[in-house]
Length: 424
Image (tube, rainbow, N blue to C red):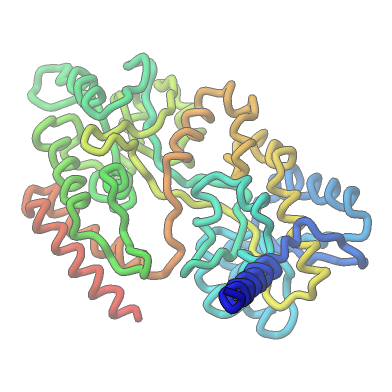
């Protein structure tokens, strides 16, 4: 009996040591104090307006809050200049401590060892304050290398309120409304107005349908997952919009869909947040914005890929500088700081910021925000190029009625595997 008690006691002690080591590994730098004078070198590639109207005022507030921290902001030129200059400077033992970069810089920065994994540096409270697609958007191979500050680059449903009163909730409803608004006005046998327009043959648009049917481009090891029921469903669906329901233009690239909508000749369009200002200013458009409708089979809304910009901490910084950088990121992604981004029409990474009146009281921003929260972070791996290049020809063949959806899904998978193999 005594031997059993001793054995159990040893086991309990061992488990407690394991848990204590695990707890110690989580450093929670956002909760630690800055005890030294620290200078943070921040490099960015934003527009001058963003630098002067958002970054500089927030940096000043941060420095007022933390009087022993100075933030030196450097505009590094274009986005490509930022990537190249950061890599060159870092390899020479210089460069920034933190960069404000597009999500896709995570790939090269992590591969070269420039980016510091943040998983064990942030507290759980800090991690929990972001929307679901935020941290995964700056993660790679199971490690988080950055924290988003703005989110977007996502597709959504837009509609002309001069033609339709409101957005439909389901695709069945949209198709019905779109049919009623696909019209040959002059009786010459050619359609003059369409119910729906989008970039028919572009994989990025097809991806929103694929996601709505519960599909995704990779498994956890970044192997392609394109020959699936979801892929076939998505291909069958887009094929039906053109050949069965006949609610989209027979041939529609980006320029055509964009001009048709601006001219007031399309009821619904699927386009990205980058197009909102142009449509708000279009004479023939009274713009409405909503999520891409739900698919009856899955009950899911259209799921476009999302991206954005965020902070990447450089590796091998001293602890005090790490603490200062984490606190700076925490500050820049606080609800109060994110409000300044929202005032300038950016969607935030902070979950609570979506309750701000600037979003909730603006139907266009609210609709875009609802869609963003239905999105999924685009993988930041170079293999995505292999995916896009595999999907495009197969999708084009389906949309020209030359290939069945099932055969197209098989072709996409085979081509993606070959593309990625060649890349590696």
